[in-house]
Length: 171
Image (cartoon, rainbow, N blue to C red; front, side, top):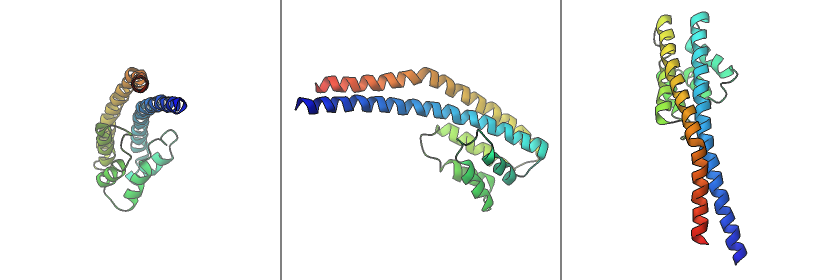
């Protein structure tokens, strides 16, 4: 009987640790995604400014760009464009089809607005659009890095403490 209780308590502690690690990894993942979006915006501005490609070719280039693999919505976005959807509709469908919890609702809206706004104006307008969103993504990435720094250890510690408190209550 005591052995089963001990095993149960160990499992509770391990579950608490696992939850803390999961929550910390979400903070890390958000920072990586927003940093990748800064790279994507820079690449888009380069493609628009120097190569002057259309949105389908631009998206295809972004899908092949090293370092942007974490932006898993790019492939569905490209496929939606190929099927004839407008950039805004394609972006909404791809970004809002992304699993919940990957980024915040505000991040999701900002990503969708960036990709949905591509191809909607002339070259100068596109470059201005990229410059605006580059600053927004840089700011969001810096905020995510700060949140990771501040909350990362706290989330892990609190989940372990909650598990230990539950073990003490069941002892």
